[in-house]
Length: 35
Image 1: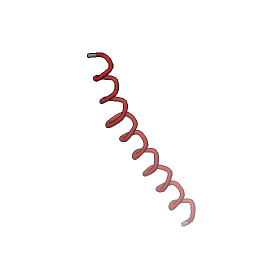
Image 2: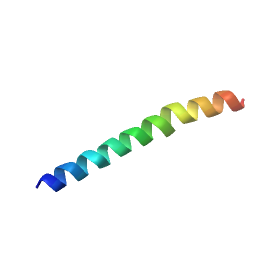
Image 3: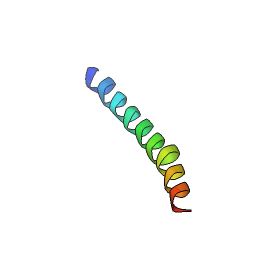
């Protein structure tokens, strides 16, 4: 049961990091800097 909790935590953390990095930070910065 511990393995499942650890896997879920990693998955959620990875999704959150990707969403924040590529969704709010990378996109806004890339678009603003390019244009």
